[in-house]
Length: 178
Image (cartoon, rainbow, N blue to C red; front, side, top):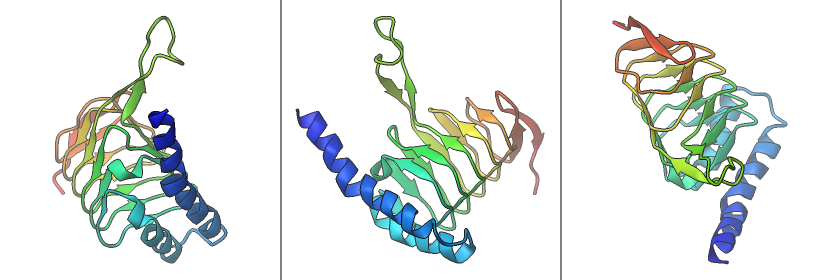
C-alpha cells in the first residue's frame, strides 16, 4: 500500500507539474527563449540543475529527483529520459532530438518480461558531450568527456573520453582531438 501511495504522490507532486509545463510552453515556438523558460520552470523538480538549462518541447522525463544536470545543458525536443537508476549530465552537454536515455531495463522472471520487474543502472554523461538525434543510451553507461555520439547510435557500453562513437552498438570510430 505504501508503494502505491508513494507512486501516486510522485505523480501529483512532480509528474503533473512537468506535464503542465510541457503543455503550456508547447504552444510557444521551440526557440532558445522558450527552451530556457521551460528549463527554468522545470528546475525545481530535479535533484540538481545548474545555470542555463534549456529543454525542448515534448520531452518526457521520469524520476526527475534522481537526475542531476550541470551548467549549459540543452535537451532537444521529443526526448524520453528515465532517471530511476540515477542520471548525471555534466556541464556543456547537448542532447539531440528524439533520444532515449534509460537507467532501467526489464528483466525476465517466471517466464514474464512484462511482469518480471526491473534492474537499475546509473548513466553518466560527462562534460562537453554532444549526443546526436535518435540515439539510445542504456543503463550502466558512462560517456567520457569531449565525446560525440553519432545520430542513431545505441550506446550499450561506456565510451572513453575524447572519442567519436556511432553505430548499433556504438563503437569508437575516431579519437576526438578538438
